[in-house]
Length: 215
Length: 215
DNA sequence: CAGCCATTCATACTTTAGTCTGAAATTCAT
DNA sequence: ATGAATTTCAGACTAAAGTATGAATGGCTG
Image (cartoon, rainbow over all chains, first blue to last red; front, top):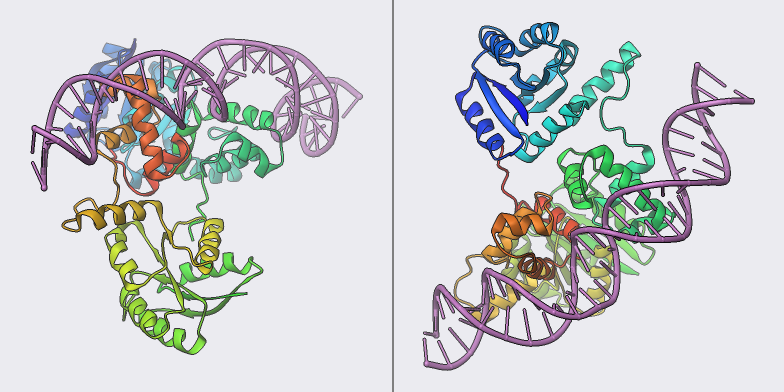
């Protein structure tokens, strides 16, 4: 059972998150905080496994709250939930100790995936955040691959897959064996944390990993 | 050599079509029109074999332009290119004398096929347009769901499918048997003219047949 | 140079997906 | 009420998809 604490100043957001998380058997919402200070206090008293933290909150923002919580309780994971306009704060958020960064309009299923992913010790960043980090990394010249570790060839395969092609067709297009395609695809599934090609294709289009030809 | 005239008000579309058609040895783009009036004028002066005509254009729309051109030069074939939202105009377009009707996001290869098909005297309709015409021909009364001949239940199944669910999961979600899901899915494939669930999912998202929940 | 990673391919296997055929119950409009 | 369409389900397939495991090659790097 994953014990979740929600920290967001918007009532509707909390209700929405609660609603979706309640449908998950292995997830339990153990508390709600309306600002950063409450989040810190509840994190200490409740000791949740993970906190869904809003970036912008009154009293204390998500970054500060994250820093304080991670300082005292490093085992508590924090998934930063934010709106699109806050994307400049990706780096600070990650530096503050957040294990993930996702947009608020994330799909329920995906949110759950992110939570589980984090509980498995993996980072989970929204694709657009990747670009930010990517640029940031070039400047600071350190930090490993955080997200989307797809190799060039895997990206080729995914691109073909996202055109709706079968393994045989992909193999033909890329001049390799169907066996090879299967290998790549299995690896893609693992890296993207999806179960089948349909999910992979949907993931790719949703996260803009594709290049539409579009006449 | 097939002499082609392109009529579309969007520069990018014209460039895109030009780009793909240039790779075809037996196809020559002999002119470009930015609106219906230009299309009519160029059709007369250039006398192309076929016109790729956008439905929605300033000055004069594709329907009107098609009528005028076919009235004067019935030997000039016209392939209507349109976006999904214009699907209500399939019938008028065909009645105006268009030899074919295709979506703008058609694959290059498929577009070329359509062109050759028309030059051989065959009609070439987008699959969904065909159904529309069938229905329209018989009922000829009203046309609520002109396109998307998917039944409500099939739409349910497609919606679940587009979430990346398996047949078993869909069956569970909709409280029916996996057999039933399979039946629906097979029918969906037929109606959408796709070969598998991945293509169906991609089709659904591309054509906005999905409903984003959004936390 | 040794080692890691990407890429390739293979065998063998299990599990879904998808098709075909057939059919019963229900709704709905003519 | 008859016919048509929808929805439901089944059996019996065939064809793909996906997993697990292992292995050879070549490139790049410390």
